Image (cartoon, rainbow, N blue to C red):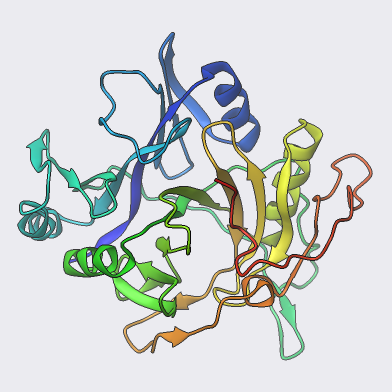
Length: 321
């Protein structure tokens, strides 16, 4: 029994038209729209729903003011996995069940749900890499992408003032601790075997609660670059990237998002199993990024857009209140 990642993310926003432009440039497929709502999906059918922040269908009491994530629905790989989650969630505030989805409010106040997954099997592949000991790509150039087409929403990150309580709750559901910043943050994956993390909770000294970012998995590092440069050509602002995380090993590129907070392209993360032993790290900018480009890459010149000062905060992705 296991959770197999994110099935749906629901945003409450202020400017539907800007949000529509952003997700189309980002590479999502628009599958339904009306004057008050937008439904997008990734290649594998992971859903991104966008609603006006005053839409009565949204869960009440958002984590923060302004545009942000209002609900996360997690993928159960079977009815039995969903039923296991129900046994934990039924004791949480706001528990309900309808149309095969069990829902509640998690310890930080976020509306969550679990359903048997609606994501579909896919057949996509990324570029092979040639290393000193293995030539995996022969008589074949590596690809160049004019834009990205995300495979799935791979992970989500929230600020919390209840790190231990939130971590304990998700571990009861079945999430596994991958790595941690003791006292500051925990990386959690949804099952024993899978990508480095699907959920990351970060606790700051100021007690901030809210969204940090949603991350979308793409095929390979080349698609991270191609997607990022497309977003730059379209006028969207880089927060940081491209770069590489030392903890998950993933290559990344972050953008400011009118839907709320930040959004990330990433590829080539570590894959873990039940044999993995969680590690502990001390927060710091060099622990957050092996390397990173400030200001991004201009999509037309294919050169760094601008330079800036080196980060000094413990977490480079820390956003201002």
